[in-house]
Image 1 (cartoon, rainbow, N blue to C red):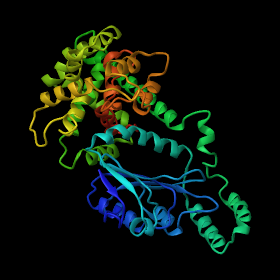
Image 2: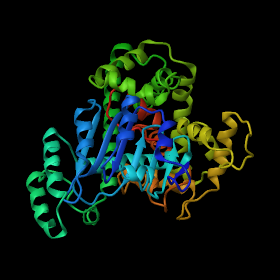
Image 3: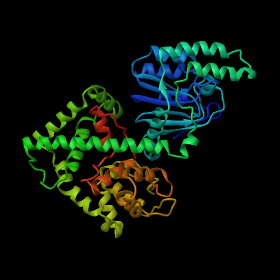
Image 4: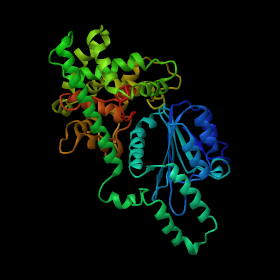
Length: 453
């Protein structure tokens, strides 16, 4: 994590850019008058770029910046929103995120007193906030629209009209603006809307529910494959959701995890290759699953881990779960393995530089989380009973609560772990969805969010 305060501590956003290797950037920045260094960085690195900014009577984006997007690559998009928009956030997908005060202006990047944090993807905090960042951009996108060539012409004309304007003619300018940009959405206040609903929560619930439907369709396709090939070694009573989970797990391990170019870049490259025909890509993966030799470690998950976790995560077992039972669950969860592998020694109460293997780190993680509580005083067993089994609320809504509400948000237990565990507990109803599953689907051309944590 780095504190970005320009000349106060000699750390500028340009220094962050120098060390970034990613494949896509999403930025939400209220005021955009200059973005030369930022845009040139994206051009040199051949990065996809989406920028959301204000376009209203008192501020329109710089015509020069708009023109760069209009003339730029097809992977660049500029989105306009009218009012009640003040973020300064740059998301370097799968690499890190900047959250601070800097607009896209020359002064903000170099000379102003600004304050912000850059959180690297390797830090545990990133995994905890990433799903909220993804939901934030979904909500912002819903109240924005893409800029066009016609907008560029209108912005140039409007900027010329506005430049000499005085305070007494602001109302006239607002009227002129409405004539030219009546279709730009986002004029309603999020505060007023929030009285009725939470746009971020709704975006998350909509995306998560859609992701589960996609996994269910993959199950249907796999069932058709079984009519041709049979289930071979897979036990007859194994839920299709468990089998699909391991199809995608094997694809991730084989085609993504060990990519020389890096996981993020490989995922984007595969997505670009498959997005025109994701169904074809998924069918090929299922065909390979049904006709190739399956590694022993995958068979172990299907034959042993899955039935164990289904029993261990039942309401009755969670009611009496002790620290030994929690350690056993942790030992059989890929999402927990990932978090345990990434946690710094200091978080686990171990001396810096302590060398450990994965089983040791899993045990440390289990012991560490067993004694933690949410701000509402809830232990891990109570949180799991709520997320996995409280059917008074939609499961995606329970997941959102568990990753955003301090009363339920559990230290180091994010959406990847919870999304996986609800699937292991109830595979006939909710397919497991951890970060590997989301990334594998995205790599196969499916438009889903890639959550972490």
